[in-house]
Length: 228
Ligand code: TIU
Image (cartoon, rainbow, N blue to C red; front, top):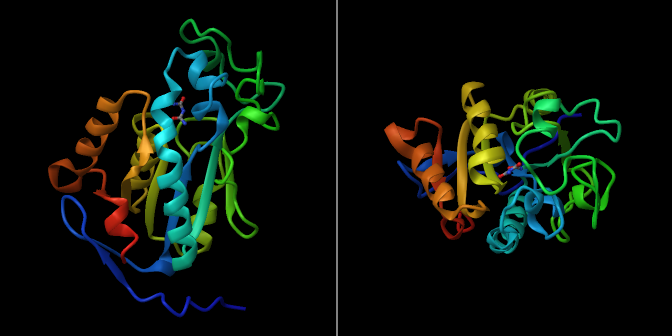
């Protein structure tokens, strides 16, 4: 049976940079990147790397508003989580041994083993869990296309446009957006719904994405998007 488009699935155009972004809801997916306790709450992977996780708290409410809008519009919603198998077989030593973190991937922490699937820290922050029918992608890398079924999910549903939110802007969000751009997707990053431990990196990433005529894609404000 072919799913019929939502009754309000007419093409939409949102004010964006470097130019207006047009999309059709039934060929567009929201990709919400790594809204996990390990990155956003104290005691997780992000803090173990020496970051001030307080910078990410402000992303949670806009991210919820973005997901709520996407549900109302009938978009496919993809939620990603960065984490590893308990035996670490999908975690390259180059990732686990990099730098001098206070605890490493797989070590015990207050939210369970750091960045391990099934542990509390690897779960979504409250209020950003997928609903039945939405897609969850567990990814071992920064990009959501690497070693996952994301391409299959998007191709099988005829998706051509991707709207992004999540954390962190210059690491997993930007990597995934660049992977998607190279695969031919039209990509929009929602400004308030993404954040970094380094606010200047967030701002620089937004500028990089939309520079050169949209070399990676578009950026738009949440307030403009939820109006269309
Ligand atoms: N460290 C950092 O900024 N980010 C990550 O390690 N992963 C994601 O961005 N999800």
